[in-house]
Amino acid sequence: MNSQQKGNKEEVLVIRDLYKSFGNKHVLKGIDFDLFKGENVVIMGQSGTGKSVLIRIIAGLVEPDKDMVKVFGQEVDKLDRKELIKLRLKIGFLFQHNALYDSMTVRENLEFPLIKNIRNITQDKINEAVDDVLDAVGLAETADQYPSELSGGQEKRIAIARTLILKPEIILYDEPTSALDPITSVEMNNLINQVKKRYKTGSIIITHDLTCARTTGDSILMLNEGKFIRKGNFEEVFDTDNEVVKGFYDYYFIK
Image (cartoon, rainbow, N blue to C red; front, side, top):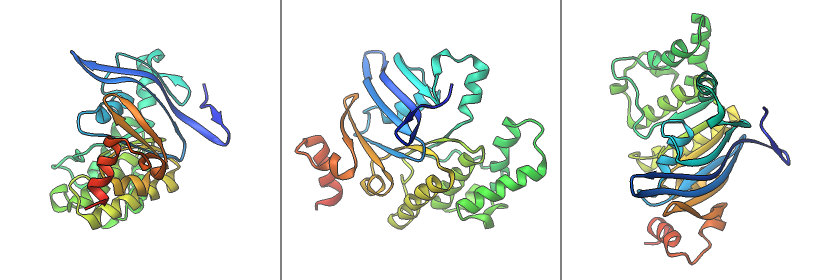
């Protein structure tokens, strides 16, 4: 089944009536949203509101209690194991803490997903893919270095390169500017936009960083107590008297 079209946009992800609880803690309470090809959607909210749980459900790392999730027109819960593995290869996940292998060089970290997931891939194809993603993140010179030799910003960039190596159509970013200084954060925001332009990905960006949200987000969703309370572009979301939303804006921009 192919992805649906809405106007000129290609719908790559549809979530309807999504619920998730852990024991008596109700984290997600019936949320809905769509993601389109070439679109960055930012999801914001206080700690513990379910942002990271949401993208882990999308990545298939956490099972929802109740939902309808369609990825590229396919209902995820109706896929068999083989189909699900194939689908997951189209989804890239940038972990908050990068999750690079310390014992491997940058090149080896990037080669690993290719060797693991693509049978009979030639070394020439591996080299071509590695060179392409290193060029995309501007770090070709780091190929033979180890993660411990990289700065925090460089590690984030290499983590993005590793996410890109399998050419995903959806990228899930979990706090991409976390623990970065302001200048490096700006560079990361610019890179997220460059990735969208170069690879035409649809992306979901989980962040507390309003500068990141304003710079990268085509649309923004504000999550509170398991539900979206505001949706729209940056100005639309923060043009409100809602105390939860105002609290975010005032903390970052009003001193």
